[in-house]
Length: 556
Image 1 (cartoon, rainbow, N blue to C red):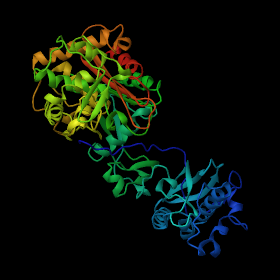
Image 2 (tube, one colour):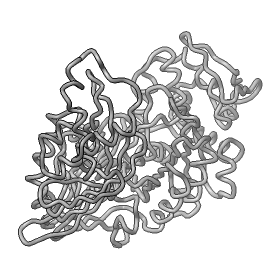
Image 3 (spheres, helix red, strand yellow):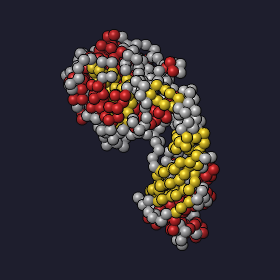
Image 4 (cartoon, helix red, strand yellow):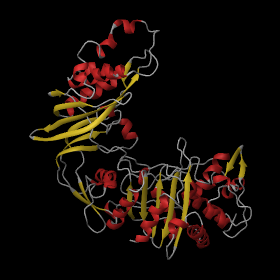
């Protein structure tokens, strides 16, 4: 399935939409029902004198009056079914006309009630209550949305900044809302023990369950129901987003799909990521590739499977594999880590400008000292890291088929300073917790086993394979430095109390515009491997580390 990302950060919230039908206007919040129909208000913006002199372009911040008038004009026209007037109140009339016209006909919403809220600056929230009707079936619909008023390019007049999400927040530009027979029957997803997996019990699994339905709904033996759903347009399809059910008028008959998820680990993973604002984690079984748990503290976009983030120093596992295989270094070889290293006009620094004047490569790995890795760049070819990631770890080949949408990493060929940055998981390198859990799993087993959520025997999928396996010597060297990191290095605090065969690596990835880096942690214990990320959390050992370590200590 490769880089499929059909299920994304578009979980339904309670926001508004709607058109057509009988509409009740409430006076409150913005009071648009009265304001828009009285002298002044939105109509004042359409006076000929306001448009006659095109040289007189309005500039500066929007006033509260302008925001109130522009939003009132749009909402009043929309609720009255005056599509042309509503569209003219936006900064993209053609796109607004197309969506508003289609929704009135296809969404089958009746008894629509729009309730505005108080504006915050140029942003105006509003909510919707309606009834979705199809033949003799009907169900209530409630949700919230918002609009933002901006100055229109060219004349500076206040207009609603048009995006399809104004109508319904799950919509991407070009999408539509349709009520009718769903294209895909529902599925009943089971854990490895036969228990049912639901979003109510496991909130993180919402996108995963949507992906399972998309992939297996037509082959699992179910029957389609009647639904109000988001039908994706070309742009969303290109971004690999799935159609999404908003209201099910009739459930249909679900088919059954068994997954590899471990219910105990899944519950624990949900609890662990809930301790951080933007955390994600994946647990896999190295000997088979089975995915035992996946969780995100945000229950929309599945960062754990589909994220594309710089992995920071966790990438040093792959870099070290390459260095060991090329016999450029051994764990106990003397290898200082200087404060700075210049490469192709760039000066690279270690975290906190630290340095290791006299030490081994093992110590530099354990301390995650950047320049002990970047200083190998002059001895490497531009494609060496890319080949290592692909040929040993199965990364970046766009061919993983785990059973739901996923991204299998990217390690593009880079040159100069960018190649040096790639060695420490920055630059153009992109991963997610699924990828980095697989990296640790490969270290444990010595060979790549593509992770999967649904057994390939269910649909005769062909799992991705790596071109070669690492040697027993290289595997031993990797486990050496990862064990040292877990016992004495940056992972020691999180891994304290661990027993048996274990190892770990931390990472911190700088992101433009963030005060704190993304914190990464990947580790293994016995026949379990896991990886996690906490976005904008800080150092991985302090943020993602406790999450991963807690799950490894559970076993499974």
